[in-house]
Amino acid sequence: MKALRNTLTKLLNALAGISFIAMVLLTCWQVFTRYVLKSPSTWSEELVSYLFAWASLFGASLVTSERGHMNIPVIVERFAEPVRKALAIFGEIVAFAFSAIILVYGGVQITQLAMGQMTSSLGVAVGVFYIALPVCGVFNMIYTVLNIVDIVKYGENANKEAE
Image (cartoon, rainbow, N blue to C red; front, side):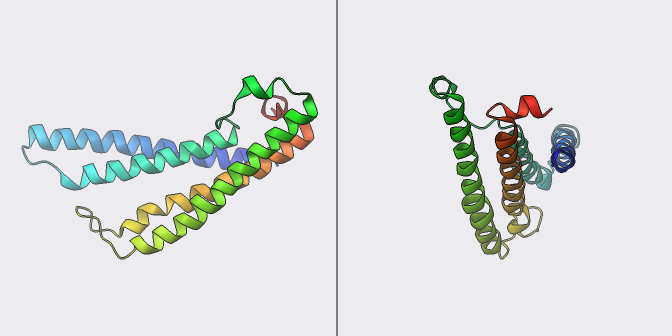
């Protein structure tokens, strides 16, 4: 389980890093073409916005891997360990359901709908960029299952003890 988590995390870190580097390079290109060449690049701005969305989704999956999603520890800490453990599992189940319904199911639906639309500058189907939704949804679902296994095994503070 730990090997799977580490492999997925390395992959997501690489994808997010590549997206970030590409955004920086494309933004520099954009500034260069606008102010030096006096002929702004139209496609680079559009690509940067799509890469930003991808990087954000990759980052959200990384947060899910670390169980860094929203919670209210002030309330949860007042309960005994078995209740905290149950609430942690419940939180992961909610994250799993969100990922399955909104990101995977909804992402597949919107991706299919957007395949008929072309981006204005790049000339690529918009659906190609929406593929990040179901892909990251699957990553989130895998991570939530791994998180539940760790919570059952190690308790509510699974991430700290599993490392």
